[in-house]
Image (cartoon, rainbow, N blue to C red):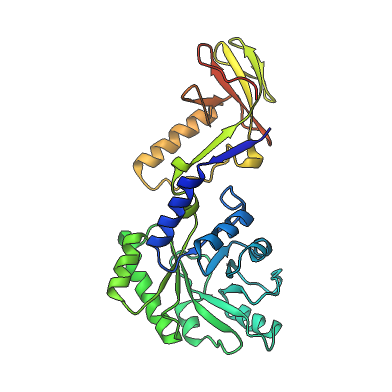
Length: 324
């Protein structure tokens, strides 16, 4: 039995509609595992929203979207000469290097592939510099717009100044009405629209769209097994002792599902560094808090989660769920 995501469909769809209505020109993003829903399911939902374009993360994800969605599909990962790009006129490529722009045009002579030119923003990941954009030769492609992938936090707390820098370049390229942006807040989008009424911003939104109303989503793990334990009993691969009497629950959901996996912390403030240090101390002591709640409380892992299942400790006295 699996780790399952239960969705309040009516509430979830209402949230999707609110987000889409609040963001004119939205480009819904469905990448990776489709935020837990699957790319195919989200592609059908984008069709339902009526958005003219959606985005996927890689070329490997594009066929599922193209099959189930009638509009254009943008690939966020930059095109490279070895990219497994499907031959479909609805596909829009992202290009971040001058040599790739030339190679893409030559690989599809007479077709004029559709592209977004990605700017090298302060994110510092992919993209063309300001000088490269000024000198770019787009004659062999159809430029659909300029893409800005911005960091989570802008200089001085705002992305507006940086966005305006690239906006001037977009005007010189003749694509100022097609600026595709990631990580601009609602306030920043409104500010830019107010200051530049002739500009069309196309916000690319994933997490805030699909997972923005957490109350509509309820992940639940199936209880696969339960074992009574006493203080000091050793269990698991690493034979760690349990702290006191209770039960070890074996539940569906492990590292294959992302359970227990965590990216390095940004630790940008004193508080966040203190939290990181505290977590490191607990990890060193072999203690890690699981994401699972039993009887209303978040419970501890007995040991790091396995690939398909996790083992968690529930102390005596707590209500224990039945198997299944």
